[in-house]
Length: 515
Image 1 (cartoon, rainbow, N blue to C red):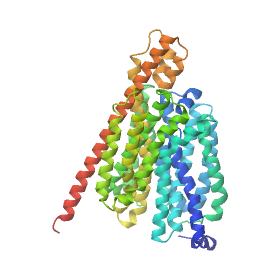
Image 2: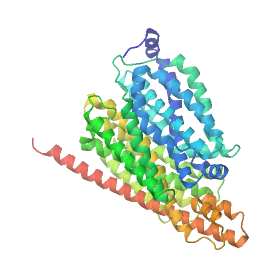
Image 3: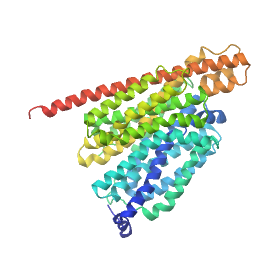
Image 4: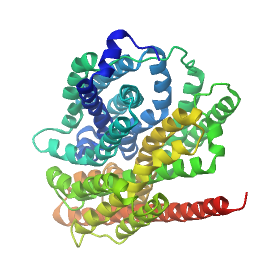
């Protein structure tokens, strides 16, 4: 590492280190929070901009996919130009993109701005973690600092909908994006004062071809999954996009396997422990994001709670997740990490199973209980997962492994919004199509099939009997979609727990076998 004399003095001053951590915690919290901050704003946003079901999903997950797709790339870029410089650039771009999001006038404009937000967010995560590792040279202090950083990441993601709901009470939906402005102001002003600059003298070459191939592999496949599941758009275009994505994805894999210094070291997946833990992190994040999307919409569109009330009802999930994550170190002093992970996954499966039978007759309590249990059980997986991933590979590959763990967290959340969100939307569209009231004009029927918010908007234009019939059909269809999403989530969590149990058992036998 090359460090200037001035920067060296910053790292040697105790109080400066902790002030630096406070500054670095802000963008970490913001990036995580912004991944889910839109969930409670979706009904109002959809009605205002006229977003379709497919556009609604792109608005929510374009951010997460860009973060997941570019976080490793941005880590390499930070090595070349300097971590602090990359952090400052990313924070400024994030703020500008947030302003564009707040005053977007069309769904497509918002989707593009969310994508730019994701690109900027991808610069913030590796910069903050790398700077923390460089600033805190004592192992004990570094462990404490990274623990605070991780708490900001997971708690921010879980509490995103709560902050969004609170802002929707006095302001319009665009206000949820303005959280970035004061954070950016603090980081841009205080960062050059308290943060040192670090850059490697022999930084890896930034492989722009691999960056392009990775995005060209991911995004067309995501589009194809959405279009085919929702049954909208041209099926030829959807299948064509799927083929294009698979072709570019194959080219990306081949390039990484043959490169001397790959952007993504796919050889790490030969390690079964690494692969299993990374997959578990992604799939657990997928369940959390997918169920959160469905439940937050249900609270508003079916149960009729205000944004503030919905935020308060959803808060236990975030709090339980924070408790599960922070209590894991104490828990693992009494039981083994493998027991904590498997037990946590099974506990989350119980919470997801409660949502399979949920309906609108018992209010919000079953949903609050189910999501709270999911969040509590996921705590050990997130608290221990990154350490298990890094510990499963040789020390010289620890950096690459940590980047992949961070990527899996965001990719899992984005997949939850995309895949589970698409499943719920597809079930809703299929179910409501068969129960639309007679005499509904084609445009109104299409709007009702798109989203439950669209059905509510069309119902307000009908007579009392037709309005009640349409709302009953839409609410029943949405609940069915939530139940199906919960069933899929339960199966994923049980499957992960079983796989983890089998793997840990085999690992234990291998350790006990005579050498």
